[in-house]
Length: 473
Ligand code: SF4
Ligand SMILES: [Zn+2]
Image (cartoon, helix red, strand yellow):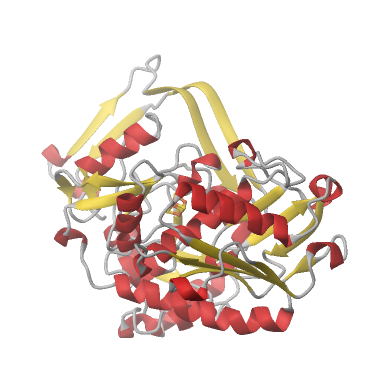
C-alpha cells in the first residue's frame, strides 16, 4: 500500500494475532503496569503536521523478546474539529495499527497491548517512525477535516508513567461529561461494528447509560462520529418501540442487531446478563460473571492479576465471554457502565454483586450504594466460594435472602393452575433442533476454556415446564 513502509498495510491484516513465540517485542499487555494511548484535539498553531517523535529507545534499540511500557500520544488539529471527537478518533488507532502486517494492537486507553512479529521486524519494520507514518496517512485520508497531525511514541518508562497520570485524568473527564443523560431522554442510540474484524457477529449498542464495551466511547462521542463519518463503523440506531423497560429491549435495537450480525443475533436486552444479553467482542474492560453457588455476580477487570473468587483468572473468564456471542452469565462490560443507574438492572444491579477486585471497588466509591459497600467482598476479604458464602451471611448481603427463597418449596407447586403448564413431550419429538449449538465452558486452568460445538443438534426433553415469572426474577 505504501512504497516507503517495509511491510504491507491493508485491511487484510486486521484481526491478525501474533503468538508469543512469533513476536519480536511487545508493548503494554498484562505484564506491563503503565501503558496508554491518548488523542487530543489541539489548536492549529501547536501541531506540526507530519511530525513523528520517539521519547526513549526506538524499536531497534530494544532487546528482542522483551515487554515494554508504551505511550502513544496523537495530536490533531483542524478548524472544524471539536473535543467530542477525541474519543472516537482515539479508538481508530486500534484499527489503523492493525492494518500493518505483523503488528497487533489490542484493547484501548490504559489497557493497550501491542506486538510486533519477528517476520515484520526482519523485513525492516524496526522503528516507530513507520507506525507514525501509517497513522498519519490513514487518519488524514479517512478524515479530511484533520488538517494537521503529529504523533509521539514514548518508551522512556518514567515519561510513560508521568503521561499516564495525565491520560487517566483526560479519560475520567470525558466519561464524566457523558454522565447524567438518561436512555429515556433520547430517541436515538448508536451502534458500532469496529470489532467485527475480531468478532464477526458483535454489534455494540451505545446508549447514554450503557457505555461501549471497550469503555472508549460514550453516546456523545458516537453521535459526533456518526455525523462526521456517516459511512463509517458507528451509526445511529432509532430506538423504536420499548418492549421491556427493565431488561432494556427495544425494537430498533433488535432490528439493527439482526441486520448487522447477519441474522446471528435475534434480540438484545441492554440491562441484563441473562436471556438475550448484549454481545461481547473481546476488548471489554471487565467481565461480569455469574457465581451460581451464591446466586450472585462477580466483576473482574483486565488488569486484575490473581484468580477471582471462583478460581478463574480474567483470561479464562474473558475466553468464556468473548467472540461476539451471547453467553448467559458471562458478560463483557466497560468500567463506566458500573457507574450507570441501568447497570444490570434486570438482574438486581449492585444488590446482586458479591465480589470484585479491591482496585475497582475503590474506583467505584460514590457509585456503589452506601449500604452495600461493606457487604461486597474483594480479594482481600475472601479467596474462595466457601469463604465468600460465610462472608455474605456474616455481612447480611441482600443476596442471602435469595438463597432462602430458592430453598423454599418450588413456587410452581403452589402456583395457580393457569400459571404452570407441564407438557409431556413425545419421546421421538426433538424439542429444539438447530444446525449448530455452541457452549463455552471455563476450566480451572487460567486462560483455558473448552468450546463445545454440536453440529446438527436435536435436543429432547421428557417434560417441559412453562411457568410464569415476574421480569427480573
Ligand atoms: S468495543 Fe464496541 S464500541 Fe468499542 S470499538 Fe469495539 S464495537 Fe466499537
Ligand atoms: Zn472489541
